[in-house]
Length: 504
Image (cartoon, rainbow, N blue to C red):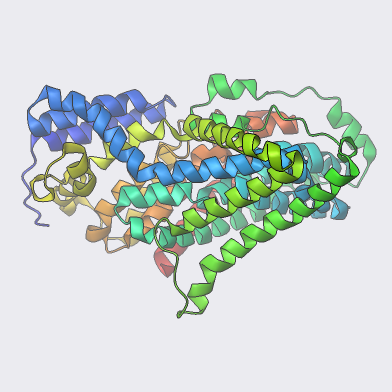
């Protein structure tokens, strides 16, 4: 694209809209209204018609919904599966084996991290926080692990590592890929985000261990008594009043569920519970294998685009049906399965619905999506963000590291409002615009931005995010938790960004 692009009023309005949204995020406020107003203003500037601008409020969200609906379906199926597993307490059984090896502080540190990552990778941190906190955290504290350290590990492995890659469910890479205009390469973004999440998490966990090691204590049941005697400093109710939309809902996900003892089940139900606790993780491990196998055996077909998400959703639906049949019997399965699906849809739209108008605004920056929103031919549709970047190309540093850290910084800023996902349309669109002029790949920049947005807003650096749920369960002050996590997480993100530039 030539550097002498003539900027129109629409370009400036779009740029002002982006800046207003970023400023709104800095004040940790919801950005849906600024996004809708920005859409109205930009389309009015493009078409010269306020009527078309009003229509675009609907059409932008509609186009975003069409692009992202597969993500909503995956969330729905996974939530339905989780609800069906709860009926037989199979979700609790999947975590319980980790408790047997928690004999000291170091082992507890590792086991809490592994269990949180394992559950969060398949179901998001929704069940991980209450499950790990109710089942594993008391055992870890009795083994000598300080509650603050336990909370740090849960946040790093769940809200950080697992959610920032979102490798199994695929919500985050799906949004990033759509916004970056590389939907067919969503698997590549997911792969790179997975590696970067491991690097960030590995560094953060190592630093957390080194910084907090001196506070580890010998195993003593009195430690658990002291912890149980403390009143939680923050509760999940604060998430609704202080947090934002999707992350607050994710944090609350299973807060109302009772973690009951296995003795409440009949012997038959306990047998079914054990079976489900084994076949559920094995099924998803097989899905991971199918995703990774073509990388080692090139002759095998590669799952492209939405196929990987479809496979995850299909497996989840089959497992949900099996679990419901075991719990309710064949006849009631016909009635209960639709109920699980309805609950899943409700959760999906409460968790992600606010992303649609935000994505609709940022989609206006790319000509392909803008063409659908404006109902115009592609060759008659401006590419606002790309043309803005092209016009300012001489001001963009040619240093790959500066560009990558710039995208990371935008991701971090977008997460300040306490939501990890709302910034992904911005970081994805920005990655697509900067890639041609920086020499870095779109997928790499999108993955870097995704890491910055979700590690920040997903619940490791922001006190008004779902991190408040982790602090509440661990009975520690949320600001103490933020202070303890800041250096390990920021250093981890910096090192992963350097690795992204060097190796991708």
